[in-house]
Length: 184
Image 1 (tube, rainbow, N blue to C red):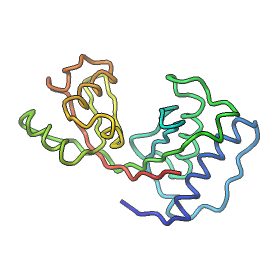
Image 2: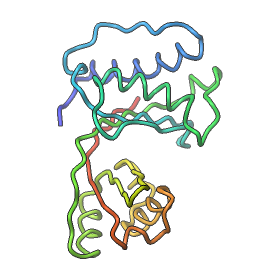
Image 3: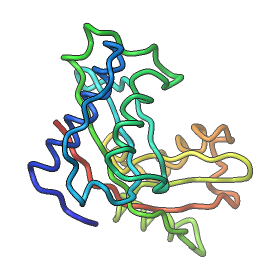
Image 4: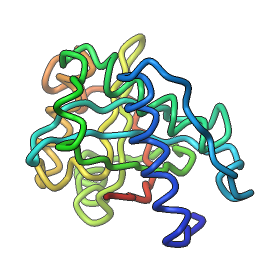
């Protein structure tokens, strides 16, 4: 995964915050000069928290556009369109913590036994996509901080997908990915 300079990381965080601010103030977003590395197609999630409490998280699993555009789109969607939360208000803006997770392309994880799956997840702590037609959900790697036990992680991921808690044990497809976390 590409690494980004401090200047590029700050630019990404500024893009996210300014995208939210521009929407709140009903003004167009001023986009500064974008370096080539941020013009590459990459997928990202933008997570907002206030005092460590989740305030929104939306993103793309697969790269569909240039990274800087994905950051802008996902920042706005997270702030105003996450169905779990009311839209961000003006007085919350200065209290938002922004985290951008830049994802690698997910790869199927093929395993023969539940123990093999649990062992891999416990050791590697990747982002995980769980799917069982037509249901799908993902947890970013950062979720391991809250759910460090692989069984609990997969149980909660199954529930997030709208499946029974033990769906991960019964033929669900598992894909894994890495994420580079950029925080303010």
